[in-house]
Image 1: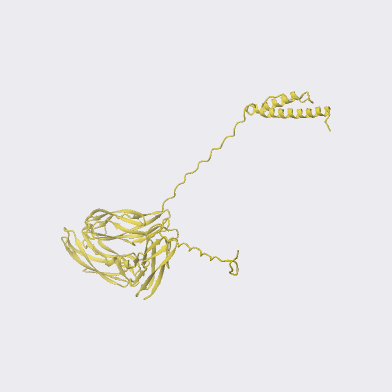
Image 2: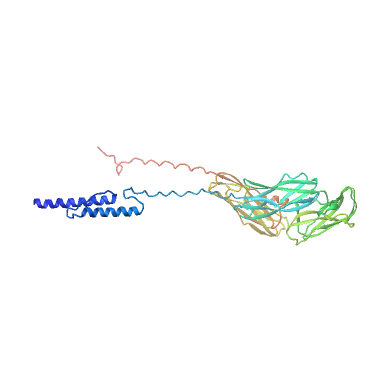
Length: 445
């Protein structure tokens, strides 16, 4: 039905009213001053202006201009990224106690140690570098493995036969793979007898050579040709004695000698090791005393290692090849003669890192007379790059210092890691013969 004139006017009035209300609200929020008139309320203009004034007053109290644009929100700065700090590199240190003064033409032993740094744990090979000519120097044992964060001791045996008196030095070096660390070992050789006396304490010097390979066996009797020598200005009779505690008994012959003008006098030293002597390190040697107290007592010591028996041996397979990420094994045979007791096994990689992981099973063996056993060396090349890697295998008695007689029980197996060849490609699939319809009949057009 068509809308009448009166209805149309009412509709337009409602639309105009709604439009004016929308404009008024926009002006109030945006800060624009508008006069809003409600055709049904003659006081609408005054009411709108009052509301706008109240809004301006509130914003002014807050320190903002109602006509000003809204302030942008502050942008938070990104937090700084902490730089990565590299951790300490694993390694080790070598150190020895101060030697001080050492009597010329004598032997002595000094305590040293290898200390782990930043969790290092690996075999460290020890040696003396550039000792003075005439000085015998030997680390005992020749290889040690410190525990992570700890230290392990070794002994440094020195024997001077012809080094002149005065200040000297050499280096004690430890090597583990690519790592090498050295300790400078300074010492001062005095001009005479051992024992470190004063005044005329250096008048007489008794000396003994090292025993063969620096090792004695329980129940063994061994002799050594020693000598006593005085300085050229000294002449007189002195007494000679010996000491071997706590490993056995000893004698010297003669027990007194006449010294004259620096001429050496021979003395025979005999050592008898007790059958139950404690295994490990000990000192043996001779001493000189003067009944007239013209000099302080002196001595010439010989460091020795006491072993139960050296009647054992070992053989190991020399090498093996293994592909990258593969595993392999070698075996070592241990045999004894009349030896009875425990034998320790030292095994590890010569390089500190990058070598295939390795282990020895078992790590020690209990042996009886004329017995034989096998030790398995296992290698895991997972994640290892191709190359050649050397290991060491050591067999020794518990608590015994390393010496030359154990060299036959040292082995250096080598593991070769290689990249396996890719497998050949699979053969092409065989072609299927062509065939006609079932029954083998040829179709006819």
